[in-house]
Each structure stands twice: as C-alpha cells, then as structure tokens.
Length: 304
Length: 331
Image 1: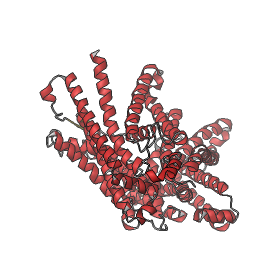
Image 2 (image 1 turned 120 degrees about the horizontal axis):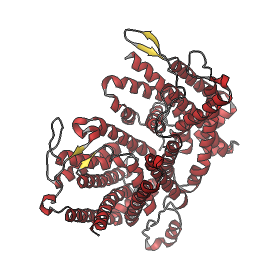
Image 3 (image 1 turned 45 degrees about the vertical axis):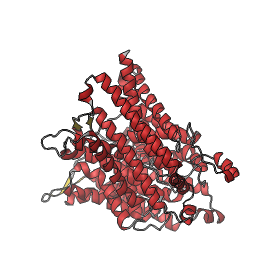
Image 4 (image 1 turned 90 degrees about the vertical axis):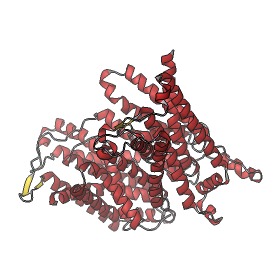
C-alpha cells in the first residue's frame, strides 16, 4: 500500500513535468497535441546518445554521483537533451504545426499531431530498435526503509523526485517573478491584447515549445532512469499526461502539477484493487470522472 | 488464375470492410467536424460484440451464445453505438478536443479490456469459432469467398446510399451548418449538442458494423487485430480520399489498403533480413507521412467535398468553394 503510494508519487512527478508544457501549449495554441508525449521519448533517447558519447570521450565522467546510478556523463547528457528536445519541439512546430495553423482550424492540428506522433515514435523505433534499453547496466540497489510492511526506495527515485520538484519550482518562479513570465501568461490569457502591449506572439509560441520540450525531456530521462527506455514510452505517457491537464484544468500550470500527482498516485493505488493489466486505463477513468463532476478541471476556466 | 481471383476477392473484401468504417468516420469528421481518436475501439466493439453473441461456447468463457449472424451483427453494432453514446454525452458539450482525448482514452481502455478480461474477450489468445452465414450451404471455399465479398459490397452500397441520402437531407445540411458556424446554427433554434451526439453515435455504429463484418470474415478476433494503427489507417483513408465526400472515402479506402498490402509485400520480399522485424515500423511511418503530408499540401483530399450551392448564394458559394474544406477559421 505505502509502496504503491510512493511509486505513485514518483510517477506523478514525471507526469507533472510532462503535463506543464502540454497544458500551456494546449491553452495558447488551442489544440490537443497528441504528439506531445513523444517529446519525452525524444529527450530520453537524445540523453542516451550523449551519455554514451560523454562516457567515451571523458572516462572520468563514468563515475557515479554518490549512491545514484546517475553518473556525470548522464547528468551532462540530461542538460543537452533538454536543450535539444526544446529545439526539436520548436522545429516540429515550424515545420508542420505552424503551416497547418495558418490555413486550417484547431481540429486539423489535432489530426496532424496524431500523424506526427506516429512518425516520431516509429523513427525512434527504427533508429534505436524495439528492445528496451538502460542508461546504466549496473544494478541500482534499493534501500530498505521498513521490513513490515516492506518498503523499498532506490536512491535514484529520491533524486528524480527532488530534481522534478526543483524544476517545477524554478519554472514557477520564472512564471510569477519575471517579465518573461508575465508575457507568457499574458499571451495565454489573451493573445491579441498581449500583442497590443508589445509581446511578440511568435517568440512566445517558440518559448512555450522550448520550455515544454525541455521539461518533457527531463521527464523522459527521469522515467528512463528509474525504469527503462522504450520507443513506446511516449505513447504510454500520452493518456496520463492528458489526464493531468484535464484534471488541473487546461491552461493552469499549477493545476497540471497537481493533476500529475493525482494521476500518478491514483494509478499507483489502483494496483491495490485491479490487475496491473488494467492500469493503463486508469487515467481514462480519471478523465471520465472529471468530465462528469467538474468538466473544466480543478483550476480551469470555462471556455467554449 | 483462381489464385489471382481469390486474392482479388480477399483484397476487395477487406477494402470493402474498411471502406464502411471510413464512411462512418466521414459522417463524424467530414460532415460534422467531430474528431474520433479511437476508431479502433468502435470497430473492435462491433467485432467483439459479434463474436461474444455469435461465437461457439467455451469453458470458462462468457458468451458463445451461437446467435444467428444478423442478430450477432446487430448486437455488435449496438455495443459500438452504446459506447459512443456514453462518451459523446460526456464530452460533446465541452471544448472540441475533449472528444479527441476521450475517444483516444476509450481506445486505450478497450485495448486493456481485450488483453486482460479473459472471461469476456479471451485475452491475448482472442475469440475464435463463428458460423459464417451460408458457409455450410455453399460448401466450396472459393465460391463462399465470392459470396462473402458480395455481401460486404451489398453492405457497403447500403451504407453509402443511406449516408448519401442523409447528408443531402435537411438533417445533413444542419450537420454542416453546425460544423461551419455553431453560433449561427444555435441562433436558428437548432440544438448542436444533440445533433452532434446523433452523428457521433451513428458514425460509430457504422464502424461497429465494419468491425462485425471483419470478425465474421476471419471467424477470429484477437487484440492483434485491434492494434492502434487501425485508427491511423482509417484516418489516412479518409484524408486521402477527401473528408466530406463519401465517394472519396471509398476511393481512399481502396488506395490506402492497396498501398498498405503492396508495401507489406514488397518489404517482406526485398527488405534485408535484419530489417524484416521493422517492416511494420516503416509502414507506420508511411501512414504518418500520408496523414501529415495530405494535411499540409492537400487537405481537401483527392475528391474534395462537393458543396451544395443554393441558387441565391452564388457569390458566397464560389468563395467558399475556393477555400479549403478544413479552412474554417484561421488564427
């Protein structure tokens, strides 16, 4: 029970990171982006490539940091992956979504995002293979917190939770304390008015993709660090991330964070009452419950 | 010779079944502007519904009632419609993309039920055994395959004619009116939510019909048949043929199915051995490229929607005809 709860909190942190960018992009560009979760997979695999590269170039970077299986090479690769994924998110927007946005309605964008997701996912499969991979072949030993009930925690999991919370805090401060954060919120609120006030819309759209891509990449790497890398990881996170944005209310960053934890913990606790095969459907049940009880989410505003 | 004919019969049977599903999607997306991200679930509901009602009984397995084909088929269609009704009633009042997310969720939930609920769906091994209509009476498998093809084509013709009538009726005009401008339709006293729900349920029932025919064709159904790629294939068929045009929907089904089977054949034959595992991956990328490419360069499809033009609206109609089908509002 407590073990499931802890695992749920960890999953929740990863879902939250993924949901932040999605909720902003959905609010600002007004379409549900089904290719969004693929950014997590892109981030995780870019990190894999640079992790191997740094390990080969700088043997000293192979040293693990403290008790973690994370080493300096992967830590550096994480930073590179965040930047690279942000840039590829901007590139995908320029290449596909912006062109469709200019000539068709939001539902065509939803449609296109389905196609983009299919292409990205299968390109990753083609390049890296169907097999699941690991950053480190070394076994990460879990620390026993208590024997009855048995509760195990890996140092990596503690690190992932702390790092995810730190990233969210940084983003929260940027959003609430900086001019850039104000501009971002203004565009989300009312694009036309924000433009009148001198905010460049295209720059803000790029910024949202950049931030969303970077946070998703971190989420992908964190997931891969505590589980494994697989080409299907983006697809598997798609529904949880959408559920988090709907629970929190589309457009609400704080709502997305809270929604992510709700989805993660609910999926963890669901293991108590249902066979694990049904857990992928859990976010769907949460979506249905929210649509029944509070269609605009916890912090969302009504919007047609 | 008989080999070629029987392959052709197989090809056309599958293309016909898929075309029925594309027609169902066309009613939702093409005529009403509803995004269904879980086509496979409604197709699957029809397939599993038919097998549960009409399949043969097995130990420890719910279903296997051996009901006659028409009853089992109708049951599958009804199941698809019921699921659509439940999802539609929750989401159609909300932001447009909620339907897309919820239907995608239906597909994920449906897949986990088919894989795990062994008592109901047989789990990974699926459901097998179904008395196909007239199979025993005809006897000869080749003649039976031709008869089955004729039945599929008859269903396809019936669905096509039914939907054509529907789209040309005042009801169809209303659906397009809602798609184009909901506020205007509402100001005329129409109820968009109810009309959308009806179109969504009807379209999903047609997909269920296609699924039921698919399951009775193979007399076998498993989660492998209901892979998420089916949704993408059916979408690609519609966007290639032309959303909003029922003839386009059928044309798209034939073209994409030909491209799919053809590329599968070529890859199996000519791709290097170490690539064989990835032929599906390459085909998926092709489907994705078709969808994105069509949306970017020819969103109206090969056969664009024929706009019904009223006599007094010549100028407005010319203007809207020069516009893309999907070109509703631009940001």
